[in-house]
Length: 318
Image 1: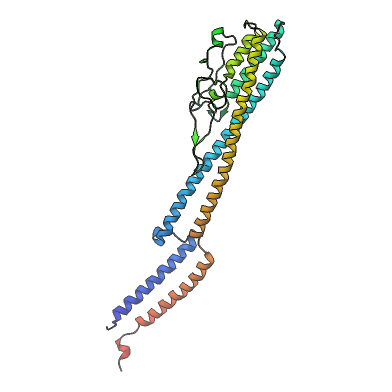
Image 2: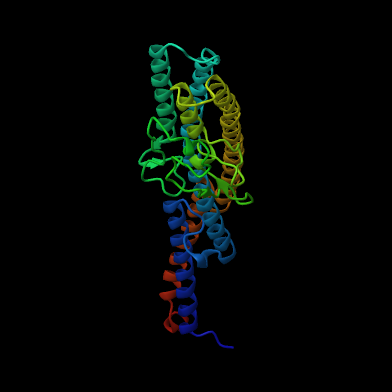
């Protein structure tokens, strides 16, 4: 096969273009500090990087869910602690009137105290986080609890359907980890302050607000059982304290679970970013050496091509 001047020129041009392409690629990697700047640079690792990117975004969403849920649990815990403290005040107060009240002025004072303590329970049941009522279930844009009249007719004392709650029983669930079941973020308020025996309740079956009214009704002297009615309502409220304590314990277990998954997600993200960095981050020192070598080779190619292109058949004539 005869090597013509055209073939030599084409080969030289091809080599120059290849050298130029390598230089451009090295310069691009140095500028971007990335090994892969487009899928065609490395199709296999490009797919890996895309997959890692998706997993990092998912993990970041889990972290955001955990942060919001943790804040929600903090508000819930504060409200429940306040309810527990209020119930302690009620127990202290009722212990002083367990034998009944004969002094009208003292009776009126106790009624006012009980009404105030009941209002405190309602206020804490209407705790807000931002513009959301944390005990309202899915209906969390309006206060879930309302107060009742100070005096109730006797039929209301026996009415299990009587309720102060206008929220719903929806459980607001969030995903906190890839392998985790969705976690309930809220506690519907009816499970704490207006529970009843008509449905399965996780913490107890006492309608605390109704029992407050029963006690107030008895203290006012409207209860024919007198001291017996006061003692009965007081005993129910003492049991109701355990109902609130059960909710506090549940919130504590949720916080522990959130902390555990927060650490797990942080470790997962760190591992993903390490793999990403090892795959994508350019070794600038190595690229600097390659750039120098490639520049030398490219300049040598240009010099050799320039000398070859000056030769013709006239150079071989005698």
